[in-house]
Length: 141
Image (cartoon, rainbow, N blue to C red; front, side, top):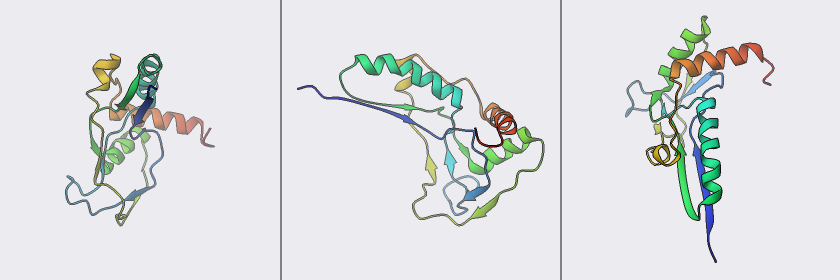
């Protein structure tokens, strides 16, 4: 009997509109907001396409993290969103929830050489593309 388990983990897709920031009590982060590893939706899709044939042909248990490997605090993301949106971005800071992690990012160095894949888009492009999409699809689809 062979075991065939594949886990393809995705991290912090960029594109959602920020309206609330959870947590201002992350003393271990640069500006006391959570740190995340955001990835552009196109980069993620390309990574998944590169992984699909490999995942079908390999045996055993395999876990791959698809991430950018560059970490930003939530306030840094809001700053980039402000530049992309051209107008004010409204947000409020709420108390940290007990279950929130201060930092959430992936070890991506295994997936990149195995899939011969890397991300192309930086945080500013993620914000610009999110704004363009949302401004043309303000009903959410």
